[in-house]
Image (cartoon, rainbow over all chains, first blue to last red):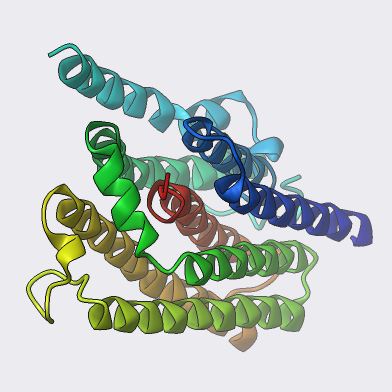
Length: 88
Length: 212
């Protein structure tokens, strides 16, 4: 058990470090890249939470596919929305 | 990993039962992701269409309260994860304690959110009520409205999460749910809490860090 708990604490340390990174990037000289950096950090944080805290690493194929299926639906939603707005 | 599970009808094997539990919860959370995803898509589009107005609006948001709340939620998620671990090892009191810790942080989050809304009211950022600030004029106003809709919807989910965690902790502490056989109660409550955390992880950069 202590080793598993240590993994969880390790993930938390990584999450806090990512939070510090994203705030630092906001005040840094990154101009138009800030949004990309902040969004990438958010995806990293979400990935860590999904993989470890939300037990995706323990699951078999089918459960993982189901858990991440929303990414496909969101991609359709956002893809078609962007296709409309950005091509006007 | 599912050796600790108490098998119940209609499942033939522990692993199958555990798969079904997680599958059902993941499907529910996917529908929640669509709800928040649509809102985030809209906000992101608005930012690309009105970059200056969005940045101006974001500069009037309480960045440090948002940042503190992000840290608080991430920490509460650690408590929940440790609670699930304790539940799988049959540690009743530790489980309830960890869940109580997460709930306390959840209450701190909502308190800070309330203080933040109070400051927003003072600054005239709120729609309809208060003396509207000049910032609200033009396209920045709608970005601020989106911020209120998204954060209020998230706060509502936090309140539901507090009820869910509180129920799970009570059931475990009273022995109405036996650990580790019925740890699924803690696992599913935890999944919901983590998901609400993930939503905030995206709301934070999309709104607070949009200051250009």
